[in-house]
Image (cartoon, rainbow, N blue to C red; front, side, top):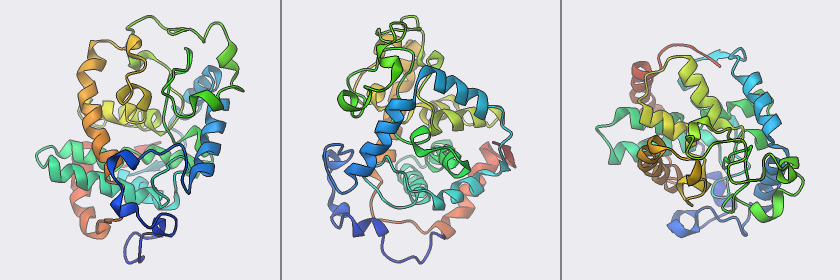
Amino acid sequence: MRLVNIGPDPSLVYRPNLEEKKKEQYRNYENGDLFERVFKTYKLMHTNQTTKFVRQKHAEWTSFNHNEMGIMEAVMSLDQLVDESDPDVDFPNSFHAFQTAEGIRKKHPDKDWFQLVGLIHDIGKIMALWGEPQWAVVGDTFPVGCKFQKNIVFRDTSFKDNPDEINPNYNTDCGIYEPNCGIDKVLMSWGHDEYLYQVLKFNKCSIPEEGLYMIRFHSFYPWHSHNDYFHLCNNKDLQMLPWVKEFNKFDLYTKTTDMPDVEQLKTYYQSLIDKYCPGILKW
């Protein structure tokens, strides 16, 4: 499916007032047209994302032998993906990529690497097109190997069948980690954030460290939006946090029915890809 001349935003079938949403109406995990779908995805995630599972996925996906393609091809492949964990949108993820990038471009015209991060931040979701279930790809991330903290989405209702919940090695505040070890040393629930970060590092892309941090931790809402897990943070995490928060504004609040002309924008964003992530990447 192409992103031009498709008519009205299909999400309006479900939520005709999306254009008028206020900031406090985003990330509604209590009710809404998509609640059942969202809760089902998180329930599967919170049941199956164990420390053992995450380690298995690292071994499986960081061999980088699944595919070879350029960044723009990966972005456009998200035409085929609707994120089942997102309560705010019900249209293909490729729309969101250009919305985020254009939002950043308007506010930060001098930071082309930041704009590129907006475009590519979700393309790790391509794993779902290669057979991974969405509960192992999308949604908010959280540490495994330590206590699941209170501000994880659906914390009180969806972890009861996760064996790590009752494992004494994992259900303390620090679990298997040392205090202030740094969240880059913490195993996060497996998903698109960590996968794309690993792909970019493996392919030696030159996005600045601030951008890589945004990519790796933009879904870690319990941390960057609710102040959980600060006992695992080091000084670098605290220095990078404002960058992650700045990115989050565009990731979240550009989800509207104002759709950019993708074909018109491709040339510009391809120039950024060629600058920071050129050629064919191994996935």
